[in-house]
Image (cartoon, rainbow, N blue to C red; front, side, top):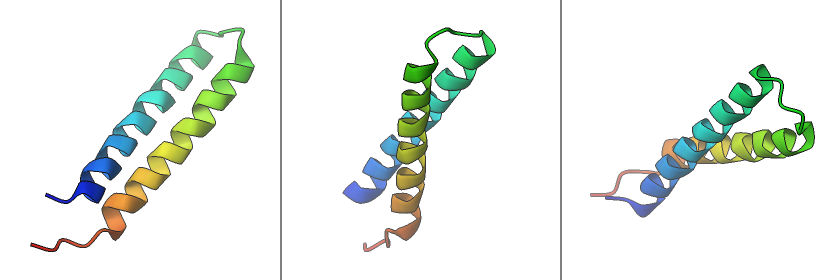
Length: 61
């Protein structure tokens, strides 16, 4: 099992969770928009970096 793939999967899952949380709070009209923007941006960074790690890592068995 490749460590980079596992780390990429964990980053992707964390990104999805933070994006879902951001969307949920925006729908509920939360008043702390600054923190929601920060959480959303960090979620996007985690999501796309995790996807690229999984996609670009070669399987060497």
